[in-house]
Image (tube, rainbow, N blue to C red; front, side, top):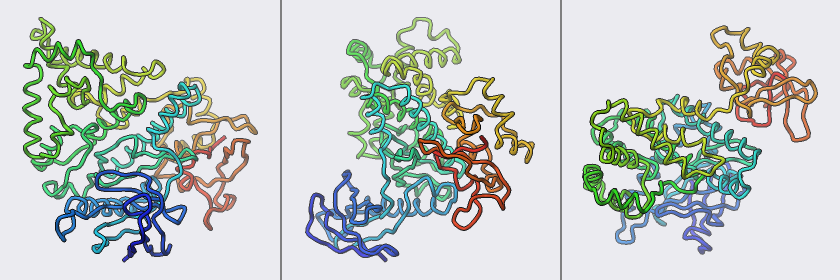
Amino acid sequence: MPELVSHQPLDGKFSGFTIDLVGIGKAQLTRLLKQSTETSIYQTSHAGVIAKMFDLNDGQSAELRHGPLLSYNLEVKNFKDILDLDDLRPLVPAFYGSGIDRQNRCAFIAMEFLVGQDLQEWCDRGALEDYSDAWMQDFRKAVYEALSIVEQFHRHEIILIDFKPENVIRLDDRRIKFVDMGAFFTPRHSLETEKYVYSATPDYAELVTDTSNVQTGRPLTQTADIFSAGVALFEMVTGNSRLAIADQTADQILIHPEVFLFRDSQIKDVWRCFPHLQEQLPLLQTQLGERRILFSEFWHLLKGYLAEELPDWEQLSEEAHLEMLLSVGTTFIRDQLPPRLEWLAGPIAQATTLRSIRVASIARLMQLLEDPLDSTLFSQIQNTNGFVIHLNAMDQSARFTAPLNSWEVRRNPQTELWAISTPCAWRHARELACLFSLKLNHQDEQGHRFYSIVTEEEADRFQGIGLTLHALQNDHLAWIGG
């Protein structure tokens, strides 16, 4: 097992410690990168390795702190579950080892240091650039790619639970990777839901609903991730994970407590089962006083408010109620978005609204974020792109009929034909990807590489074998069929 050796601390509690990793050797913890209540992340003396530290010292007894120890064990298991899945392994940091040091009362997970920015940092910089056209296209691409990764997790029946911008890294080469696997709900947990330790950040979760489901043995579903994604979209472009409410509106609701009293009683029920959530999940009365409303409570509050304010509410059908709720809520959200990003109001509303009218899948949410090519160009690509032609000839059931987004195609300057990004091509033909042998035919000044489909014997060599589409599934500078 990897060992942990203590040295004089530098700028963090564990700075100066040394971890001994199989295959790497000793790596000393250096600069503190991030600190939370129970965990911290450090750079190490190995440039490509960071360490996530779990503080197990309770300061009062010789026993290790149960909560952080449980979190550590859960994250290690989740990490290893994901690394066993070929299509998910490239989407998370490489795993270099883990261990528990009982003497120093801590535990660690060593992993790949990702060079890039989390989506929140990256979006904050986009705001400083006033959301240029180039940045807007990169934003749509990054968000779409992040959601496609969520969908891949769902294909393996893995629910992320705590999807938020700071847990998604946009690498300098434009790839997207997910970090922090401590809260995942996996098929392993579905077998013993009553033993699952539910852990989520209140701003990105529907605690009233999900805590009840876990307590009664009902497995969590992708609905939880759809909600989190909607909140994350709002936060990325506003910097806030909660909705602001005008003073006059908040005061008007506060003088009619019947609008929110029932929901507050449900929140108090959560407090009784999970006392530590009392500060993180405030009553609606408190949220109104603070003028900041959790998305999980916004739609319930809005429905109660509309019922109180509209004299003919009771005469309307439930379908009309929900239609009006979604319309008013979308407008409320739109008013808080930057002008160039107001188009996000619909997707955010449909991802966070009441579960009965929420979008049914991440795939459907992705459709709301598409920027499709016009039909003429799409038809041209269908008739001239080598990948599309080969795919249609190989398997009629896999015909390329889905629309392409503007960021998923690029003109090959050598041939003047349109090529498709390899991540997009892989999504359309993941089961057949190993059958597409590739050879580089051009590279432009920006480093974009264009590949033709060839026979296995003609293919470029990659790790000792012929290069295929499967190997380029996460390469955002690679293009196929042009």
